[in-house]
Image (cartoon, rainbow, N blue to C red; front, side):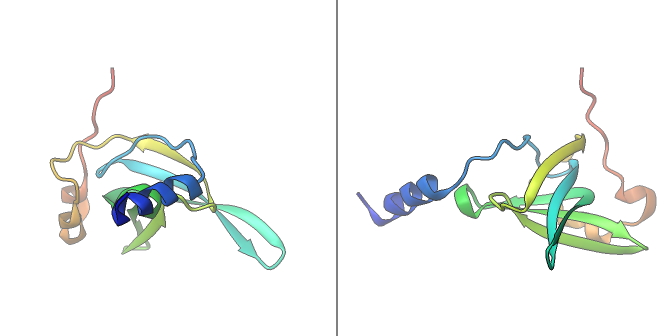
Amino acid sequence: MGKAELIKFVEKEASVAKELPTFKAGDTITVHYKIIEGTKERIQQYQGVVIQRNSEGATETFTVRKISGNIGVERIFPIGSPFIDKIDVNKRGVVRRARIYYIRGLRGKKARIKEKRVR
């Protein structure tokens, strides 16, 4: 067994499988994220457009971008994070790329992403 195969085997065994919906770049999602402040725990919702999904397996991450007070805010979430309570897919977007960094330079109506019609 090679080194890469051994690493993948250990990652698969160590990771806790969580049922998350399928989403890709261009989709608008809401991430319900657990926040611990001292002894209190609450769930904060972070809603925005998925800009990219990166890597695979236990190290997979996704980046979500939202506009907060006319300022673009991006946050990177690890897929296997125990702090992610759940993910809701609000809209499916129609984009031709896997990484939509070009959305950072767009404002107003040009920053809109077409919605995929689901039958």
